[in-house]
Length: 360
Ligand SMILES: Cc1cc2nc3c(=O)[nH]c(=O)nc-3n(C[C@H](O)[C@H](O)[C@H](O)COP(=O)(O)O)c2cc1C
Image 1 (spheres, rainbow, N blue to C red):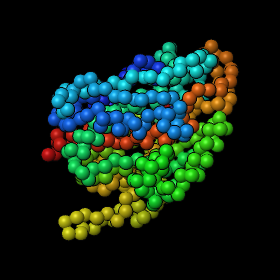
Image 2: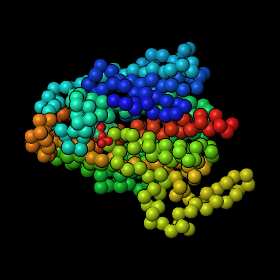
Image 3: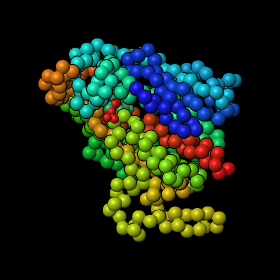
Image 4: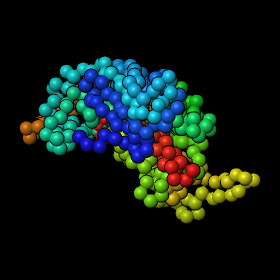
């Protein structure tokens, strides 16, 4: 399998499978002399790890990260940083009964047809277990950006729609996001989401979600505006996350319904400061950050591993049915929040470094 590396100047390569001994990543291009502790990475991994509530998969993983290289005396040395997370709670027997069948909506069919071989245990490399390694890389990118940009820098994500139930993004509260199992920014909807997702899970089904990630304190000027536009690289990063089926920057798809005057974010000067009246652009103009909040949202599809019986085929070309038992997320969107944050941190650091190289 080719292309396991993400990024241009800040690059990470992930490795490992869902039911192998471990997963991890190697980060190349991290600036030297950045204070990094395993705990900085662990905080981010803890947000993504499974088994934390009845609304996510019950696989129990500590996701304890170990730094193997690239950090000396608590500081990055500029050499490759290698991170490892051991897998602990694999139950490969859950996959025995479906090892020759292709889960509709999952990657089983295409992996087998493309490579002629497939690690069916937990989905192997197609499992979102891989995203733990991205979160670890993102934690390092975040640390670098906090030091380089300063205190005003912040990336925060939330689930803004769970299945058919949206929330009011005007009630967005960073504090609320931290206090509920859904990363929901609007506390008035949380109880309803709980009831809804429990009923979906009980019925043996699953649902999709919309996730919104916001980046604050980003300086004007990040983005190489033809073939590495900031919005293009952010969209590509989000699309690379398992189960993501659509990405919006700012008003995104909704901007098609707006008129020119509704969509244009009017600009005014206040003393030395530039003020935008609105943010339909999602903080990016001409592929370059405008200094406004960067806003990206993405849709994830419903989990394909469900108890409800579905028609499919087996690897011998026979029609059959499949019902997936075992431990799965009833809505993958919840645990996709820290993954989206990590990918945005990585893209922003990559562009921060590229901008320094050309324009500072
Ligand atoms: C955080 C996260 C957790 C996921 N958990 C599951 C899961 O428990 N069961 C499942 O079938 N798919 C899960 N997925 C989705 C699959 O990994 C994904 O559908 C599969 O790799 C096929 O890729 P595609 O959906 O991008 O086509 C998860 C995705 C993410 C982002």
